[in-house]
Image (cartoon, rainbow, N blue to C red; front, side, top):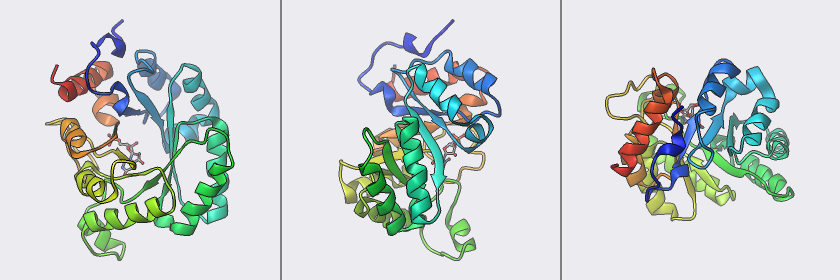
Length: 243
Ligand SMILES: O=C(O)c1cc(=O)[nH]c(=O)n1[C@@H]1O[C@H](COP(=O)(O)O)[C@@H](O)[C@H]1O
């Protein structure tokens, strides 16, 4: 069976790719996971799989050696979000996210709670969902340029002590230029050339996203919905390395 680890080592950090395990059940998710190598990618468990399978599924992935990004995008009052982040830390995940639009106090309270925990997960603020464009922003009563909104929320997250943000690759370069190297940029909204955008509005190819300064590329459907998910993942990796 072909495994992701069969690729030759490259100059590109292999762990840049986070595979979004957006599946409706354990079986198809594990069929893909069985062919992946934890040294070559990380896994994201989001609302769908977590709601169906819960913490035990995350623990199972970690037992297989994978680092897990628990993508539940907490957005609530500060006390509730902080407690949820602590629960994520207790689960041992590598990364957890909150909505930066929950505000400074919410993010600061989460940061403070995690600072009391041994080996806390990376705490990341979601800025503006990659499925939203200027017209969607106007629709929620916040007219303006998506890039400016991302920049404002990125600063808020940085000032609250978060480790980085989720943004689209389109904003990676300006955020990097403004906030520097020491701030993680996690970018969904990644589509190989010719792949269906689906509900994503602010997108770039994997190679463009890396060149723009993304630290981690979150990729779901271009892999999970492909006829051969592993082949799709290998092709994306090749597009990053030029191999
Ligand atoms: O926080 C996220 O991971 C996230 C934030 C965002 O702004 N946009 C976004 O697409 N995501 C997640 O990233 C994944 C993208 O999946 P695909 O669009 O299938 O590649 C999904 O699991 C989303 O829930």
